[in-house]
Image 1 (cartoon, rainbow, N blue to C red):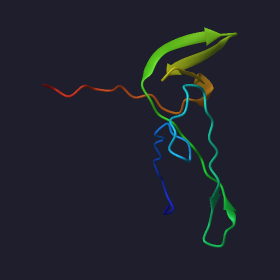
Image 2: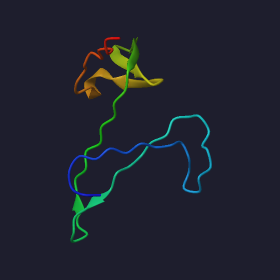
Image 3: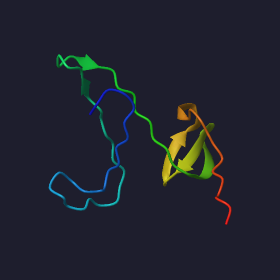
Length: 84
């Protein structure tokens, strides 16, 4: 990929095209420059907040069935439905 902001969408399949089971998955980004030297890559995720919960004094947003700590939230925006 070219340098700069990129978007990646996972289709829920493995490297052989097999559908993966429902569950929690993690990913890792490794980036190198033109000289094959490691460079820092920052990852972000986005989604629609479906709820908020409090566990052991920590606030979590529920986004696509995942608990995201409020400390990890960078920005929250209102989604405005298009006028019909």
